[in-house]
Length: 133
Picture (cartoon, rainbow, N blue to C red):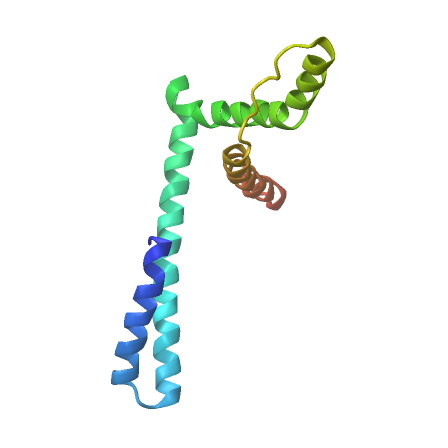
């Protein structure tokens, strides 16, 4: 389920539960059941995405299976340039009297690389737990 829809779903579910269950204990049980149903839907979405990811990774074509490594290497190289390379080149350019090299906005690199590393961290957790072959 889209995370942006969770707030309105809970709000609508809460209003319906308030009207149907005036008893606080029954109301709490109904709210718990609503939360469980929402989480079960989210779990199915995540499992479906994991299955898609596994099929993409096993694909023989580099254009299907290789996009994640490509994005990872691109972000890694861009981040190295933004943090180390640009500073060294700017220093060298100033020493030689050359124009300064262009700066890179590293925000998008950090966001994308953070997402990839988060996924990589989950993969490492799977390996540690023995879930993988």
